[in-house]
Amino acid sequence: MSELQREEALRSCREVAETVYPGLDLTGEIAATHAQGLGDIVLVEGAGGIAAFAVRHYGPHSEGGADTCFVKFGTVRDGRSAEQDFLRLLDACEALAVAVGVSRLLAGANMARHQAYWHLVARGFRTEIQGVAMHRHNDPGYCRPGAYIIDDWR
Image 1: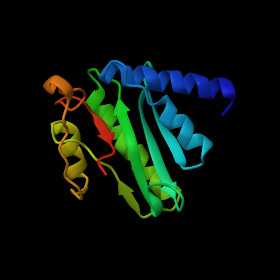
Image 2 (image 1 turned 30 degrees about the vertical axis):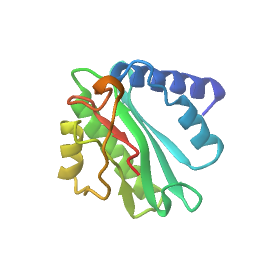
Image 3 (image 1 turned 60 degrees about the horizontal axis):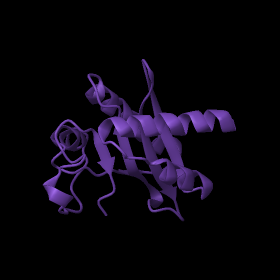
Image 4 (image 1 turned 135 degrees about the vertical axis):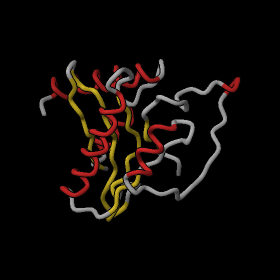
């Protein structure tokens, strides 16, 4: 990928995240994952460009470890195709886990994001850790129904 293509992909990821929650910007996490060789970024194309992305860590020196592909963060562009784009994102994460030779895919979702959580359960993901999200002024942030997000709950 050329530097120009990388810059465009980062801009697109920032735009996707912004549709889910204003100010949400994962470009630092994406750049660090790339620079440190901790994994890769999954990009899912849609009709208007990038529809979804996921930051994945795998390998012995990553948060995923030697035999696990850990989805650190993933989301889809908010809108009418969000659910289908989320399913496509999960497909891409599963396919790329196989491609890099790991046997386990780890992904987390806040249960307030009902649709995302139940799609993970339907694919065989199981709860390993339960946590409580506390938000300033009880603002749900992106922990709400209709937000198709995978995030780090470890």
